[in-house]
Length: 68
Image (cartoon, rainbow, N blue to C red):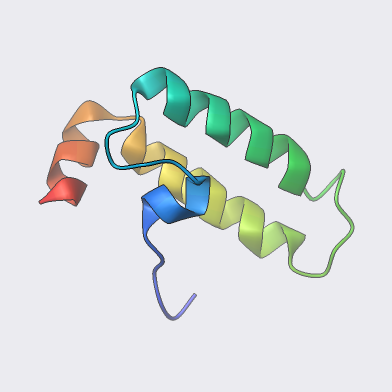
């Protein structure tokens, strides 16, 4: 990935989303884009991007740093 997208945009949530909303959006997208379930050519890359976004936004300290 040459360019990083906005993690909120990746998960489809607003910047004011609660931890529960972020988790819910992640789970929905992870099921949809998991490479074992989705045979699209770009499913693996999309899944990695979703995981990266969730790993940052689900951790309070990482999220605070990202938001600055």
